[in-house]
Length: 162
Image 1 (cartoon, helix red, strand yellow):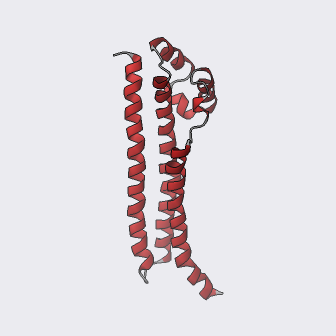
Image 2: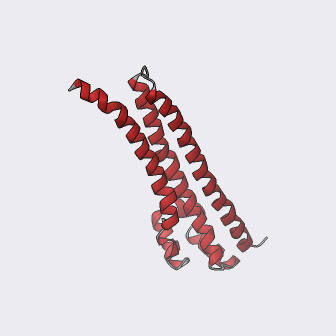
Image 3: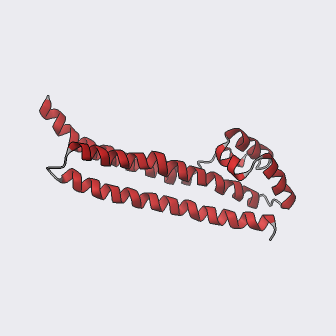
């Protein structure tokens, strides 16, 4: 199989993975919010348990959801740009010498070089409109819900202490 065909397959596979990671993370957040809602509406739930579920929910967004999806988006771009720009085997090999897939994800300076030398600057803006909505706005809306739940429960406690 030619390198260009492998890149096209990789693009499709990684794009599918990104969609799955988004769906999994939304499912996990929905599960956490269900548990959190039950705990928050119960009158006898200890405060430390409420802190814990809020912490886990927010931690999931910032430690798992956003970093994993962003990394996968970089991998998608790495293969997508090669396919869209019609890279032949020789150009794919030349790119790999300058910047491997792993380096494209983890090394900002190598990613910048690859974007400028090979991808015509296409990768300089990873968060395009749809990605911004799904990969920033959606996770942050879950954080906003967690904060609202927390405030709803904690404000009455604070007000009774004043």
